Figure 1 (cartoon, one colour):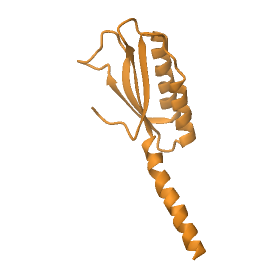
Figure 2: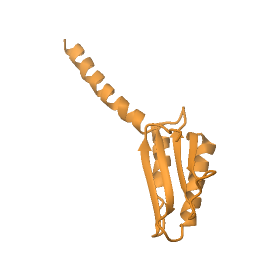
Figure 3: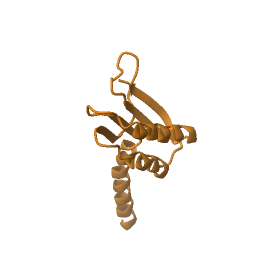
Figure 4: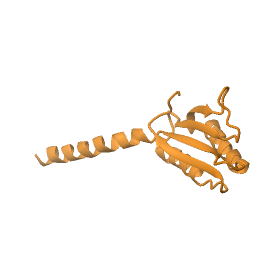
Length: 122
C-alpha cells in the first residue's frame, strides 16, 4: 500500500509539472519606438541573439509578424516569435530567454519578452 501511495504522489507531481514544461517552449519578442528614435543597437542585439539561436538549433521555428509587406512601422522595430528546437533542453532555451531579457534599450524604446506555449501564425 505504501508503494502505491508513493506512486500516486509521484504521478500527481509529474502531471502538474508537465503542463508548465509545455507552456514555456516559445517566446514572443517585440521592440519598437514609443515615439522618439528607436534604439538600433538594442534591435541589432536582439537580431544577433535570435540568429545565434537559430544557427545553433536552440530555435527551430522563427516567425516575424512585423515588419512585413503592408505593415512596416515608420519608426522600425520587430515583432516576432521564437520557438524552442525539438531537441533543445529547457536549460538551453532558458539561457536563450535570459540573453533576450538581459537587453536594456535606451529610453524611448519599448521591449517585451513574453513566454508562450508556441508560435502562432497571425
